Length: 547
Ligand code: GLC
Image (tube, rainbow, N blue to C red; front, top):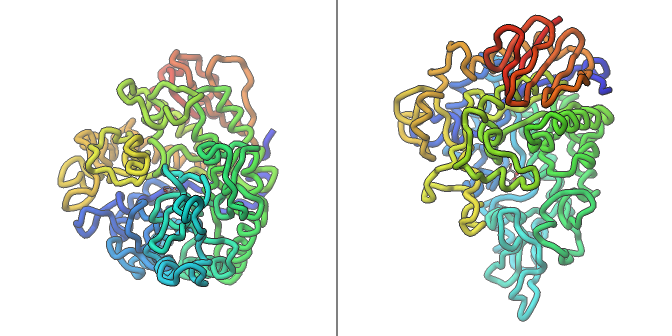
Protein backbone atom coordinates (compact mmCIF):
# COMPACT_ATOMS: atom_id res chain seq x y z
CA UNK A 1 0.00 0.00 0.00
CA UNK A 2 1.77 3.11 1.12
CA UNK A 3 5.06 4.16 -0.29
CA UNK A 4 7.77 4.82 2.23
CA UNK A 5 9.29 8.26 2.43
CA UNK A 6 12.61 6.75 1.54
CA UNK A 7 11.60 5.35 -1.81
CA UNK A 8 9.85 8.43 -3.13
CA UNK A 9 11.22 11.57 -1.55
CA UNK A 10 14.64 12.95 -0.78
CA UNK A 11 15.01 12.30 2.92
CA UNK A 12 14.78 15.81 4.33
CA UNK A 13 15.53 15.86 8.04
CA UNK A 14 11.98 16.65 9.09
CA UNK A 15 10.57 13.63 7.25
CA UNK A 16 11.97 11.17 9.76
CA UNK A 17 12.99 13.38 12.69
CA UNK A 18 12.44 12.62 16.33
CA UNK A 19 11.36 16.01 17.60
CA UNK A 20 11.47 16.54 21.34
CA UNK A 21 8.96 19.05 22.64
CA UNK A 22 10.30 21.32 25.37
CA UNK A 23 7.88 23.23 27.56
CA UNK A 24 10.42 25.89 28.64
CA UNK A 25 8.62 26.84 31.82
CA UNK A 26 8.82 23.27 33.11
CA UNK A 27 12.02 21.86 31.65
CA UNK A 28 14.89 23.04 33.81
CA UNK A 29 15.34 26.08 36.03
CA UNK A 30 18.97 27.24 35.88
CA UNK A 31 18.54 30.48 37.84
CA UNK A 32 16.57 29.09 40.78
CA UNK A 33 13.43 31.19 40.41
CA UNK A 34 11.06 28.23 40.25
CA UNK A 35 10.47 28.59 36.49
CA UNK A 36 12.39 26.88 33.71
CA UNK A 37 14.57 28.96 31.41
CA UNK A 38 16.62 29.00 28.22
CA UNK A 39 19.84 28.35 30.11
CA UNK A 40 18.20 25.29 31.67
CA UNK A 41 17.44 23.95 28.20
CA UNK A 42 21.04 24.57 27.16
CA UNK A 43 22.30 22.65 30.19
CA UNK A 44 20.18 19.66 29.15
CA UNK A 45 21.51 19.51 25.58
CA UNK A 46 23.86 16.62 26.41
CA UNK A 47 20.86 14.72 27.81
CA UNK A 48 18.86 15.38 24.64
CA UNK A 49 21.78 14.43 22.49
CA UNK A 50 22.21 11.15 24.39
CA UNK A 51 18.51 10.50 23.97
CA UNK A 52 19.16 10.76 20.25
CA UNK A 53 16.64 13.40 19.23
CA UNK A 54 17.03 15.22 15.91
CA UNK A 55 15.27 18.43 16.86
CA UNK A 56 13.68 20.30 19.74
CA UNK A 57 10.47 22.28 19.50
CA UNK A 58 10.18 25.01 22.07
CA UNK A 59 6.75 26.07 23.28
CA UNK A 60 6.44 29.88 23.27
CA UNK A 61 9.29 31.59 25.06
CA UNK A 62 8.40 35.16 24.18
CA UNK A 63 7.58 38.04 26.53
CA UNK A 64 4.09 37.30 27.77
CA UNK A 65 1.87 37.83 30.79
CA UNK A 66 1.56 34.01 30.71
CA UNK A 67 -2.21 34.06 30.93
CA UNK A 68 -2.27 31.08 28.57
CA UNK A 69 1.12 29.55 29.25
CA UNK A 70 2.87 31.93 26.81
CA UNK A 71 0.42 31.47 23.92
CA UNK A 72 -0.40 35.07 24.70
CA UNK A 73 2.58 36.71 23.02
CA UNK A 74 3.43 40.34 23.80
CA UNK A 75 6.51 40.54 21.55
CA UNK A 76 7.32 38.00 18.84
CA UNK A 77 10.94 39.06 18.48
CA UNK A 78 12.25 38.68 22.00
CA UNK A 79 12.59 36.19 24.86
CA UNK A 80 10.63 36.60 28.09
CA UNK A 81 12.94 38.04 30.77
CA UNK A 82 11.91 35.19 33.09
CA UNK A 83 13.32 32.75 30.51
CA UNK A 84 16.45 34.72 29.55
CA UNK A 85 17.56 36.94 26.70
CA UNK A 86 17.76 36.84 22.95
CA UNK A 87 21.49 36.18 23.33
CA UNK A 88 20.67 33.13 25.44
CA UNK A 89 18.41 31.94 22.64
CA UNK A 90 21.14 32.50 20.04
CA UNK A 91 23.60 30.55 22.15
CA UNK A 92 21.13 27.73 22.74
CA UNK A 93 20.42 27.42 19.02
CA UNK A 94 24.11 27.46 18.13
CA UNK A 95 24.97 24.83 20.75
CA UNK A 96 22.01 22.69 19.75
CA UNK A 97 23.38 22.77 16.21
CA UNK A 98 26.77 21.69 17.56
CA UNK A 99 24.95 18.63 18.94
CA UNK A 100 23.27 18.08 15.54
CA UNK A 101 19.95 19.10 17.02
CA UNK A 102 17.67 21.39 15.00
CA UNK A 103 15.53 24.01 16.70
CA UNK A 104 11.85 24.64 16.04
CA UNK A 105 10.15 27.69 17.53
CA UNK A 106 6.47 28.12 18.20
CA UNK A 107 4.65 30.76 16.21
CA UNK A 108 1.29 32.05 17.43
CA UNK A 109 -0.40 33.92 14.57
CA UNK A 110 -4.09 33.65 15.45
CA UNK A 111 -3.94 36.07 18.35
CA UNK A 112 -1.55 38.25 20.31
CA UNK A 113 -1.53 38.96 24.03
CA UNK A 114 -3.57 41.93 25.17
CA UNK A 115 -0.19 43.29 26.26
CA UNK A 116 1.09 43.37 22.67
CA UNK A 117 1.75 46.97 21.60
CA UNK A 118 -0.69 46.61 18.70
CA UNK A 119 -3.52 45.75 21.04
CA UNK A 120 -2.67 48.53 23.45
CA UNK A 121 -2.72 50.92 20.49
CA UNK A 122 -6.05 49.47 19.36
CA UNK A 123 -7.61 50.12 22.75
CA UNK A 124 -6.15 53.64 22.90
CA UNK A 125 -7.12 54.41 19.28
CA UNK A 126 -10.83 53.90 19.95
CA UNK A 127 -13.66 52.80 17.62
CA UNK A 128 -13.00 53.39 13.94
CA UNK A 129 -9.25 53.90 14.39
CA UNK A 130 -6.84 52.20 11.99
CA UNK A 131 -5.16 50.52 14.98
CA UNK A 132 -8.37 48.58 15.64
CA UNK A 133 -8.36 47.15 12.14
CA UNK A 134 -5.48 44.82 12.94
CA UNK A 135 -7.81 43.00 15.34
CA UNK A 136 -11.49 42.07 15.13
CA UNK A 137 -13.55 44.75 16.81
CA UNK A 138 -17.32 44.98 16.31
CA UNK A 139 -20.22 46.90 17.79
CA UNK A 140 -22.40 44.83 20.11
CA UNK A 141 -25.92 43.61 19.44
CA UNK A 142 -29.06 44.09 21.50
CA UNK A 143 -30.11 47.23 23.35
CA UNK A 144 -27.24 49.81 23.25
CA UNK A 145 -24.91 47.16 21.87
CA UNK A 146 -24.75 45.60 25.31
CA UNK A 147 -24.73 42.04 23.99
CA UNK A 148 -21.90 40.30 22.09
CA UNK A 149 -21.93 40.82 18.30
CA UNK A 150 -22.82 37.14 17.74
CA UNK A 151 -23.15 33.82 19.56
CA UNK A 152 -19.66 32.44 18.93
CA UNK A 153 -18.05 30.84 21.95
CA UNK A 154 -14.45 30.63 23.09
CA UNK A 155 -12.56 27.33 23.01
CA UNK A 156 -11.88 27.92 26.71
CA UNK A 157 -15.57 28.49 27.53
CA UNK A 158 -17.90 31.49 27.58
CA UNK A 159 -18.50 34.06 24.84
CA UNK A 160 -15.75 34.64 22.27
CA UNK A 161 -16.31 38.40 22.64
CA UNK A 162 -15.32 40.86 25.34
CA UNK A 163 -16.54 44.43 25.57
CA UNK A 164 -14.09 47.30 25.93
CA UNK A 165 -14.74 50.41 28.01
CA UNK A 166 -15.79 52.39 24.95
CA UNK A 167 -18.50 49.84 24.17
CA UNK A 168 -16.96 47.94 21.23
CA UNK A 169 -16.34 44.22 21.48
CA UNK A 170 -13.24 42.29 20.40
CA UNK A 171 -13.07 38.68 19.31
CA UNK A 172 -10.98 36.09 21.17
CA UNK A 173 -11.41 32.47 20.20
CA UNK A 174 -9.34 31.58 23.26
CA UNK A 175 -8.80 33.55 26.49
CA UNK A 176 -9.99 37.12 26.95
CA UNK A 177 -6.28 38.05 27.07
CA UNK A 178 -5.75 36.67 23.52
CA UNK A 179 -7.41 39.04 21.00
CA UNK A 180 -7.67 37.50 17.51
CA UNK A 181 -5.76 39.21 14.74
CA UNK A 182 -7.44 40.29 11.52
CA UNK A 183 -5.74 38.20 8.85
CA UNK A 184 -7.35 40.22 6.09
CA UNK A 185 -5.15 43.17 7.07
CA UNK A 186 -1.96 43.58 4.98
CA UNK A 187 0.05 44.78 7.98
CA UNK A 188 -0.72 41.56 9.86
CA UNK A 189 0.36 39.50 6.85
CA UNK A 190 3.59 41.45 6.47
CA UNK A 191 4.37 41.31 10.17
CA UNK A 192 4.32 37.52 10.26
CA UNK A 193 6.38 37.15 7.11
CA UNK A 194 8.93 39.31 8.83
CA UNK A 195 8.75 37.21 12.03
CA UNK A 196 9.50 34.08 9.98
CA UNK A 197 12.58 35.85 8.61
CA UNK A 198 13.64 37.08 12.04
CA UNK A 199 13.80 33.62 13.66
CA UNK A 200 15.34 31.84 10.71
CA UNK A 201 17.99 34.57 10.49
CA UNK A 202 18.65 33.95 14.17
CA UNK A 203 19.22 30.26 13.47
CA UNK A 204 15.85 28.54 13.88
CA UNK A 205 15.26 25.56 11.60
CA UNK A 206 11.51 25.46 11.72
CA UNK A 207 8.20 26.59 13.13
CA UNK A 208 5.35 24.90 14.88
CA UNK A 209 2.36 27.02 13.95
CA UNK A 210 -0.35 27.41 16.55
CA UNK A 211 -4.04 27.11 15.59
CA UNK A 212 -3.06 27.03 11.93
CA UNK A 213 -6.66 26.36 10.88
CA UNK A 214 -8.25 29.29 12.70
CA UNK A 215 -6.86 32.46 11.15
CA UNK A 216 -9.71 33.31 8.80
CA UNK A 217 -13.19 34.11 10.12
CA UNK A 218 -16.47 34.21 8.26
CA UNK A 219 -16.68 37.91 7.43
CA UNK A 220 -20.46 37.97 7.80
CA UNK A 221 -20.01 37.28 11.51
CA UNK A 222 -23.34 35.47 11.45
CA UNK A 223 -24.70 33.52 14.39
CA UNK A 224 -24.16 29.77 14.22
CA UNK A 225 -26.89 27.22 14.83
CA UNK A 226 -25.05 25.43 17.57
CA UNK A 227 -22.17 27.46 19.07
CA UNK A 228 -20.63 24.56 20.98
CA UNK A 229 -20.74 22.32 17.95
CA UNK A 230 -19.07 25.02 15.89
CA UNK A 231 -15.97 24.41 18.02
CA UNK A 232 -15.64 20.84 16.81
CA UNK A 233 -14.11 20.15 13.47
CA UNK A 234 -15.93 17.30 11.79
CA UNK A 235 -16.35 17.89 8.14
CA UNK A 236 -19.55 19.46 6.90
CA UNK A 237 -20.26 21.18 10.20
CA UNK A 238 -20.99 24.85 10.47
CA UNK A 239 -17.57 26.44 11.00
CA UNK A 240 -17.45 30.20 11.07
CA UNK A 241 -13.77 30.28 11.96
CA UNK A 242 -12.09 26.89 11.46
CA UNK A 243 -10.54 25.48 8.33
CA UNK A 244 -11.81 28.10 5.92
CA UNK A 245 -10.48 27.99 2.37
CA UNK A 246 -8.71 31.35 2.51
CA UNK A 247 -6.31 30.02 5.15
CA UNK A 248 -4.43 28.14 2.44
CA UNK A 249 -3.38 31.42 0.85
CA UNK A 250 -1.64 32.33 4.08
CA UNK A 251 0.03 28.90 4.26
CA UNK A 252 1.40 29.47 0.78
CA UNK A 253 2.64 32.93 1.63
CA UNK A 254 4.64 31.54 4.55
CA UNK A 255 5.97 28.62 2.57
CA UNK A 256 7.28 31.07 0.00
CA UNK A 257 9.11 32.99 2.73
CA UNK A 258 10.60 29.77 4.08
CA UNK A 259 11.67 28.69 0.61
CA UNK A 260 13.39 32.04 0.09
CA UNK A 261 15.08 31.84 3.47
CA UNK A 262 16.11 28.27 2.81
CA UNK A 263 17.84 29.31 -0.41
CA UNK A 264 19.41 32.33 1.24
CA UNK A 265 20.61 30.59 4.39
CA UNK A 266 21.50 27.24 2.80
CA UNK A 267 19.66 25.27 5.52
CA UNK A 268 16.61 23.08 5.18
CA UNK A 269 13.69 24.73 6.98
CA UNK A 270 10.24 23.44 7.85
CA UNK A 271 6.91 24.32 9.39
CA UNK A 272 4.50 21.98 11.13
CA UNK A 273 0.84 22.83 11.55
CA UNK A 274 -1.24 22.44 14.64
CA UNK A 275 -4.43 22.17 12.62
CA UNK A 276 -7.41 20.69 14.42
CA UNK A 277 -9.18 19.72 11.23
CA UNK A 278 -10.70 16.46 10.01
CA UNK A 279 -8.33 13.80 8.63
CA UNK A 280 -9.91 14.45 5.22
CA UNK A 281 -8.99 18.15 5.30
CA UNK A 282 -5.52 17.76 6.72
CA UNK A 283 -3.77 16.85 3.44
CA UNK A 284 -4.82 20.20 2.00
CA UNK A 285 -2.47 21.80 4.52
CA UNK A 286 0.31 19.49 3.37
CA UNK A 287 0.38 20.30 -0.31
CA UNK A 288 3.90 20.97 -1.58
CA UNK A 289 3.49 24.74 -1.40
CA UNK A 290 1.95 24.75 2.11
CA UNK A 291 3.08 23.10 5.36
CA UNK A 292 5.79 20.47 5.44
CA UNK A 293 3.88 18.48 8.00
CA UNK A 294 0.94 18.58 10.41
CA UNK A 295 0.34 16.76 13.69
CA UNK A 296 -1.74 13.64 13.32
CA UNK A 297 -4.26 14.14 16.14
CA UNK A 298 -6.51 11.48 14.67
CA UNK A 299 -3.98 8.90 15.77
CA UNK A 300 -3.38 10.58 19.12
CA UNK A 301 -7.08 10.14 19.85
CA UNK A 302 -7.18 6.53 18.71
CA UNK A 303 -8.36 4.02 21.31
CA UNK A 304 -6.19 1.03 22.24
CA UNK A 305 -7.69 -1.14 19.55
CA UNK A 306 -5.94 -3.00 16.76
CA UNK A 307 -8.40 -2.39 13.93
CA UNK A 308 -8.84 1.29 14.72
CA UNK A 309 -5.08 1.75 14.83
CA UNK A 310 -4.49 -0.05 11.56
CA UNK A 311 -7.15 2.07 9.85
CA UNK A 312 -5.89 5.36 11.17
CA UNK A 313 -2.24 4.56 10.48
CA UNK A 314 -3.00 3.42 6.92
CA UNK A 315 -5.09 6.52 6.26
CA UNK A 316 -2.49 8.87 7.66
CA UNK A 317 0.35 7.36 5.66
CA UNK A 318 -1.67 7.32 2.46
CA UNK A 319 -2.94 10.86 2.90
CA UNK A 320 0.46 12.34 3.69
CA UNK A 321 2.01 10.37 0.87
CA UNK A 322 -0.55 11.52 -1.69
CA UNK A 323 0.61 15.12 -1.24
CA UNK A 324 4.31 14.35 -0.84
CA UNK A 325 4.40 15.02 2.91
CA UNK A 326 5.45 12.65 5.72
CA UNK A 327 3.25 11.27 8.49
CA UNK A 328 3.72 13.05 11.77
CA UNK A 329 3.07 10.94 14.86
CA UNK A 330 2.45 12.29 18.32
CA UNK A 331 0.86 10.84 21.44
CA UNK A 332 1.31 13.56 24.04
CA UNK A 333 1.81 17.29 24.19
CA UNK A 334 1.25 20.24 26.53
CA UNK A 335 -2.52 20.23 25.81
CA UNK A 336 -3.39 16.57 26.31
CA UNK A 337 -3.56 14.14 29.20
CA UNK A 338 -0.28 12.23 29.07
CA UNK A 339 -0.71 9.03 27.12
CA UNK A 340 0.71 6.77 29.86
CA UNK A 341 -2.35 7.90 31.82
CA UNK A 342 -4.84 7.90 28.92
CA UNK A 343 -4.01 4.31 28.04
CA UNK A 344 -4.72 3.28 31.62
CA UNK A 345 -8.25 4.64 31.55
CA UNK A 346 -11.09 2.52 30.27
CA UNK A 347 -11.79 3.71 26.78
CA UNK A 348 -15.14 5.20 25.98
CA UNK A 349 -14.67 5.86 22.31
CA UNK A 350 -17.86 7.87 22.05
CA UNK A 351 -16.75 10.48 24.48
CA UNK A 352 -13.30 11.86 24.02
CA UNK A 353 -13.88 14.48 26.68
CA UNK A 354 -14.52 11.79 29.25
CA UNK A 355 -11.27 10.17 28.23
CA UNK A 356 -9.40 13.44 28.59
CA UNK A 357 -10.75 14.31 32.01
CA UNK A 358 -10.87 11.01 33.87
CA UNK A 359 -12.42 9.33 35.78
CA UNK A 360 -9.01 8.89 37.38
CA UNK A 361 -10.22 6.82 40.31
CA UNK A 362 -10.36 3.81 38.01
CA UNK A 363 -7.01 4.50 36.37
CA UNK A 364 -4.72 1.49 35.98
CA UNK A 365 -1.43 3.40 35.90
CA UNK A 366 0.80 0.35 35.39
CA UNK A 367 -1.25 -0.83 32.45
CA UNK A 368 -1.19 2.68 30.97
CA UNK A 369 2.58 2.88 31.11
CA UNK A 370 2.97 -0.63 29.76
CA UNK A 371 0.83 0.29 26.76
CA UNK A 372 2.61 3.61 26.32
CA UNK A 373 5.93 1.79 26.07
CA UNK A 374 4.51 -0.59 23.47
CA UNK A 375 3.11 2.40 21.56
CA UNK A 376 6.59 3.92 21.45
CA UNK A 377 7.89 0.90 19.56
CA UNK A 378 4.94 1.19 17.21
CA UNK A 379 5.49 4.88 16.43
CA UNK A 380 9.23 4.61 16.01
CA UNK A 381 8.85 1.82 13.47
CA UNK A 382 6.41 3.75 11.28
CA UNK A 383 7.45 5.89 8.31
CA UNK A 384 7.43 9.59 9.13
CA UNK A 385 8.51 11.72 12.04
CA UNK A 386 7.65 11.41 15.72
CA UNK A 387 7.15 14.13 18.32
CA UNK A 388 8.09 13.21 21.88
CA UNK A 389 6.73 15.40 24.66
CA UNK A 390 9.16 16.11 27.50
CA UNK A 391 8.82 13.51 30.25
CA UNK A 392 7.22 10.79 28.18
CA UNK A 393 10.67 9.25 27.90
CA UNK A 394 10.54 8.92 31.70
CA UNK A 395 7.08 7.38 31.53
CA UNK A 396 5.56 10.33 33.36
CA UNK A 397 1.90 10.22 34.17
CA UNK A 398 -0.55 13.07 34.21
CA UNK A 399 -0.53 14.79 37.62
CA UNK A 400 -4.30 14.82 37.88
CA UNK A 401 -4.63 15.67 41.57
CA UNK A 402 -3.14 19.17 41.52
CA UNK A 403 -4.91 21.28 44.17
CA UNK A 404 -7.33 23.86 42.80
CA UNK A 405 -5.40 26.81 44.19
CA UNK A 406 -2.32 26.10 42.06
CA UNK A 407 -4.15 25.67 38.75
CA UNK A 408 -2.87 28.13 36.18
CA UNK A 409 -4.55 27.10 32.93
CA UNK A 410 -7.26 29.62 31.90
CA UNK A 411 -9.49 26.64 31.11
CA UNK A 412 -10.13 26.20 34.85
CA UNK A 413 -11.60 29.68 35.33
CA UNK A 414 -13.30 30.00 31.96
CA UNK A 415 -15.01 26.62 32.29
CA UNK A 416 -16.37 27.91 35.61
CA UNK A 417 -14.32 25.32 37.41
CA UNK A 418 -15.74 22.42 35.43
CA UNK A 419 -12.45 21.35 33.82
CA UNK A 420 -9.16 21.46 35.67
CA UNK A 421 -7.39 22.11 32.41
CA UNK A 422 -3.97 21.16 31.13
CA UNK A 423 -1.61 21.81 34.05
CA UNK A 424 -1.36 18.10 34.88
CA UNK A 425 0.89 17.46 31.88
CA UNK A 426 2.95 20.61 32.48
CA UNK A 427 4.41 19.79 35.89
CA UNK A 428 8.19 20.49 35.93
CA UNK A 429 10.54 17.67 35.00
CA UNK A 430 12.20 15.44 37.60
CA UNK A 431 15.90 15.16 36.74
CA UNK A 432 17.17 13.75 40.04
CA UNK A 433 15.61 11.49 42.63
CA UNK A 434 16.15 13.99 45.42
CA UNK A 435 17.02 17.63 45.98
CA UNK A 436 14.71 20.61 45.76
CA UNK A 437 12.20 20.12 42.97
CA UNK A 438 13.85 16.84 41.93
CA UNK A 439 16.70 18.59 40.13
CA UNK A 440 14.39 20.89 38.16
CA UNK A 441 16.02 23.82 39.94
CA UNK A 442 17.56 24.92 43.20
CA UNK A 443 14.27 26.24 44.51
CA UNK A 444 10.72 24.95 44.29
CA UNK A 445 8.78 24.57 41.09
CA UNK A 446 5.92 26.68 39.80
CA UNK A 447 3.59 23.66 39.91
CA UNK A 448 3.99 21.12 42.73
CA UNK A 449 5.58 17.82 41.76
CA UNK A 450 4.27 14.55 43.22
CA UNK A 451 6.44 12.46 45.58
CA UNK A 452 6.34 9.67 43.00
CA UNK A 453 8.72 11.73 40.83
CA UNK A 454 11.58 10.40 43.00
CA UNK A 455 11.27 6.96 41.42
CA UNK A 456 10.83 8.12 37.83
CA UNK A 457 13.47 10.89 37.80
CA UNK A 458 15.98 10.66 34.96
CA UNK A 459 18.83 9.88 37.38
CA UNK A 460 16.85 6.95 38.82
CA UNK A 461 16.40 5.46 35.33
CA UNK A 462 19.79 6.27 33.85
CA UNK A 463 21.62 3.04 33.02
CA UNK A 464 18.86 0.90 34.52
CA UNK A 465 18.01 -1.97 32.18
CA UNK A 466 14.34 -2.01 31.38
CA UNK A 467 13.68 1.58 32.49
CA UNK A 468 11.52 3.68 30.20
CA UNK A 469 14.38 6.12 29.64
CA UNK A 470 16.68 3.31 28.49
CA UNK A 471 13.91 1.91 26.30
CA UNK A 472 13.58 5.29 24.54
CA UNK A 473 17.34 5.63 24.15
CA UNK A 474 17.69 2.16 22.68
CA UNK A 475 14.64 2.51 20.44
CA UNK A 476 15.66 5.89 19.05
CA UNK A 477 19.19 4.70 18.29
CA UNK A 478 17.97 1.49 16.65
CA UNK A 479 15.29 3.32 14.71
CA UNK A 480 17.90 5.41 12.96
CA UNK A 481 19.81 2.30 12.01
CA UNK A 482 16.86 0.06 11.14
CA UNK A 483 13.67 1.86 10.26
CA UNK A 484 14.50 5.27 8.82
CA UNK A 485 15.52 3.87 5.46
CA UNK A 486 13.39 0.74 5.60
CA UNK A 487 11.10 -0.14 2.68
CA UNK A 488 7.34 0.28 2.51
CA UNK A 489 5.08 -0.85 5.28
CA UNK A 490 3.10 -4.04 4.64
CA UNK A 491 0.50 -5.18 7.17
CA UNK A 492 0.47 -8.79 8.29
CA UNK A 493 -3.11 -9.71 7.76
CA UNK A 494 -3.09 -12.96 9.68
CA UNK A 495 -6.18 -12.91 11.89
CA UNK A 496 -4.94 -12.60 15.42
CA UNK A 497 -7.10 -10.89 17.89
CA UNK A 498 -5.81 -7.45 18.82
CA UNK A 499 -2.31 -8.09 17.50
CA UNK A 500 -1.01 -5.38 15.19
CA UNK A 501 1.84 -6.49 13.01
CA UNK A 502 3.64 -5.20 9.94
CA UNK A 503 6.87 -5.69 8.06
CA UNK A 504 9.17 -3.25 6.36
CA UNK A 505 11.61 -5.37 4.40
CA UNK A 506 13.25 -7.85 6.73
CA UNK A 507 12.04 -6.03 9.83
CA UNK A 508 8.81 -6.74 11.64
CA UNK A 509 7.02 -4.71 14.29
CA UNK A 510 4.48 -6.60 16.41
CA UNK A 511 2.30 -4.96 19.05
CA UNK A 512 0.09 -7.17 21.16
CA UNK A 513 -2.71 -4.83 22.14
CA UNK A 514 -4.61 -7.58 23.93
CA UNK A 515 -4.22 -8.59 27.56
CA UNK A 516 -3.40 -12.21 26.77
CA UNK A 517 -0.05 -13.48 25.58
CA UNK A 518 0.31 -14.48 21.96
CA UNK A 519 2.84 -16.43 19.92
CA UNK A 520 5.84 -14.49 18.82
CA UNK A 521 6.42 -14.69 15.06
CA UNK A 522 9.77 -16.09 13.87
CA UNK A 523 12.75 -13.81 13.74
CA UNK A 524 15.51 -12.42 15.93
CA UNK A 525 14.22 -10.24 18.68
CA UNK A 526 15.81 -6.80 18.35
CA UNK A 527 13.94 -4.89 21.06
CA UNK A 528 10.81 -5.28 23.14
CA UNK A 529 8.88 -2.87 25.30
CA UNK A 530 8.71 -5.36 28.19
CA UNK A 531 10.41 -8.65 28.95
CA UNK A 532 9.85 -11.31 26.32
CA UNK A 533 10.94 -14.86 27.08
CA UNK A 534 10.82 -17.81 24.73
CA UNK A 535 8.44 -17.48 21.86
CA UNK A 536 5.64 -15.73 23.70
CA UNK A 537 4.74 -12.07 23.40
CA UNK A 538 2.98 -10.97 26.60
CA UNK A 539 -0.11 -8.76 26.53
CA UNK A 540 0.22 -5.01 25.95
CA UNK A 541 3.78 -5.45 24.71
CA UNK A 542 5.48 -4.46 21.49
CA UNK A 543 8.60 -5.80 19.85
CA UNK A 544 10.84 -5.49 16.80
CA UNK A 545 12.07 -8.61 15.00
CA UNK A 546 14.52 -9.17 12.19
CA UNK A 547 14.39 -12.14 9.88
C1 GLC B 1 -2.91 25.78 20.88
C2 GLC B 1 -1.89 25.55 21.97
C3 GLC B 1 -2.57 25.72 23.29
C4 GLC B 1 -3.10 27.13 23.38
C5 GLC B 1 -4.01 27.46 22.20
C6 GLC B 1 -4.25 28.94 22.08
O1 GLC B 1 -3.90 24.81 20.85
O2 GLC B 1 -1.30 24.30 21.82
O3 GLC B 1 -1.71 25.45 24.36
O4 GLC B 1 -3.83 27.29 24.56
O5 GLC B 1 -3.44 27.06 20.99
O6 GLC B 1 -3.09 29.59 21.67
